[in-house]
Length: 303
Image (tube, rainbow, N blue to C red; front, side):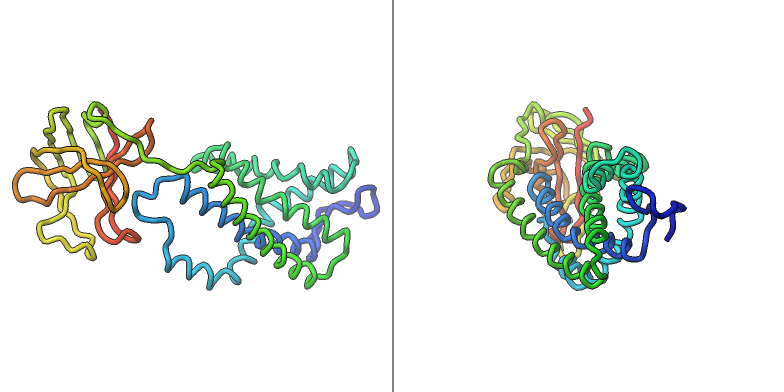
C-alpha cells in the first residue's frame, strides 16, 4: 500500500507494506483485553450501577467465545483509524526534522486521536476521547516501528503480540486492583439526600413526575409502580397518578438509602426508590425485574 514517497531518502520509506499492516493489527487487537479490563474496573468502581451489578454472565461468555475472531478485526479497524496516520506522521517527521525514530512514533499518536476526538464531540468530550484514543494508538504505532526495524516475520509478530497481550492483561489487572485499593480510582458512593433536598419536583421518561413535600406528602403523574400481582420475571409495572405519602427508607439488599413511596388507591404497591447520581446531580431510581435485564426508571430533580 504505497504513499507516493521515493525510496532511499533519509528516515526510510514512507509507505505501508503488508508486514506493517499485520504488525499494527496484531498489537492493536492484543491491547484490547487489557483496555477492556481497565474500562470495566473504572465503570464498575467509579460509576453508579443502579443496583443492577456490573457483570453480565451471558455477555462475558460471548466475549470470551468470540474474542479470537473479534480482536484481529478490531485491531485492523484501529490500524486505519489511529495507527496508520500516526506512523506516517512519524516517518515524515523522521525524514524532515530528524531525531530518534522511536521518539516520533511515541509523540505522533495524539494527532489522529485529536482528529477523531473532534469528530466524536457529540458523543464524548475531548478530555475523555483524546486521552483514550491516544492510549490505544501508542503501542501499535511503536510496535510497527519495532517490527520493521527487527524485520520480524508475520508469525513472529503475531505470537509476540499474543504474549504481550497476556502480559498487558495481568499488568492491567494488578494496576487496576492497586488503583482501587489506594483510592486512585475512587469508589462510587451514592449521595445522601436530606428532606430539604428531596422536597421538590422530580421528572423521568414518558412524562413521569413526582412531587415531594417536606411534610411527607407526595403527588405522582404517570409514575411507574409495581402492580398488585407483581411478577418480577415479567418486568411488569403500571403507570400511576394521584396523591400519597413518602418517608425515608433504607434498602438492606442494596445497602442504599432512599424513600418508600405509598400512593393512595389500588393502582400499585409501595415503591422503594433509591438514591443515585451524584451530590451535584442527585437521582431517584427503581429497577423492575431481573437486575441484569430489568426496566430501570430514573427521576431527576427539576424544581
